[in-house]
Image 1 (tube, one colour):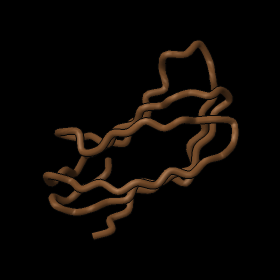
Image 2: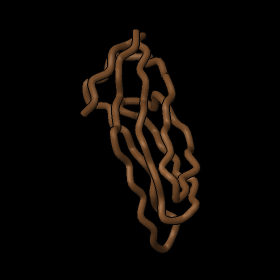
Image 3: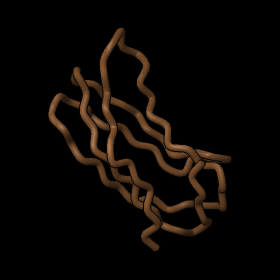
Image 4: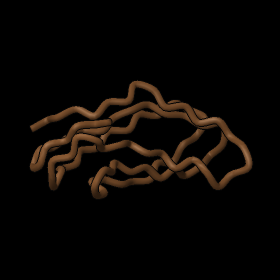
Length: 86
């Protein structure tokens, strides 16, 4: 559960890599969808950083990575943070 406050701006950041070149959708959602994007994962380690603003209070938001659609691959996510910036 990720607590979010109405009107606040947050920064989502993480490092990622994959054993195959793949597009991975992600979403921050709770009672509604607050942010979504797609990342291009490759074999080299990359860093992701993006800001988003929340439209309502939500004590139980989630960060979801959609990894399906391929037969088999490994994706690694590390240093995942959701930071309130203002």
